[in-house]
Length: 276
Ligand code: ATP
Image 1 (cartoon, rainbow, N blue to C red):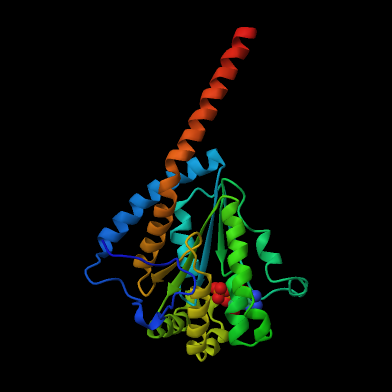
Image 2: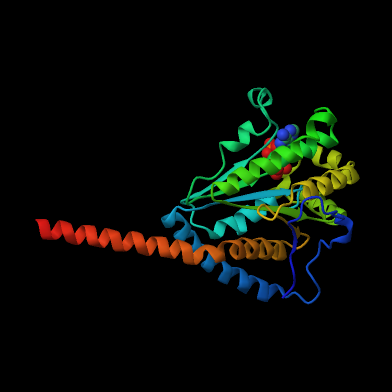
């Protein structure tokens, strides 16, 4: 089985140019689709236990350059889950009210409650990415944010949240293909945004910003997973695999809690029946 690049050590250097955007040689698309289906069933099952046990929650952060496939991942991987207990929040340009608060203000209220999944389509990471590349706040301010982000995510973890952060890694060539594809296909043209072409001109600045963000905020308990995303089927598989692998170790605890609750409720019902 191929390995997934996981970053879980703070300040370890990351070189995105050294990490492939393509599936490893020999990865088979048909087998990948089959595995995704099996993972989907396992995830659905795990989600039921998460929901019932209410001991933990899950936060999935999706970051990536334009066209990297954040929406596609939501459709194909998050779509494997029971919508009950899943919230998806897309973070665009902050409103005036949001700008007048600290950068985590708009984020924190969308953190998942126990038993639930929260998916962030873009996130607090924009505040050290687009903000840095386009010089939207002074460097002295965004530099401090890595530490705030680590503390914020640690707070969520302490509250029982399983935090997984995905960087959807696409190549410059693949992005160009996808942007042109949007222009050429009438059905996809609604996604056209001149800003995406403009941001391409800042490719290297974004690479630098991403490398620093990934490195400074990777921790054992809130790791980054770098997802080769030039092939959509492989991207979906890697994300589904990582989420399933992160949840699997909790199965026994969640099941135990549900068994205890079930035993207690049965006894309560029996006592009630006897007392009638
Ligand atoms: P996407 O490109 O994510 O599919 P979209 O093109 O439909 O989405 P929106 O969802 O409206 O656009 O907004 C995304 C844009 O908001 C991105 O260009 C992103 O850089 C920007 N953005 C997100 N967070 C911030 C932030 N904190 N500060 C400035 N810009 C931000």
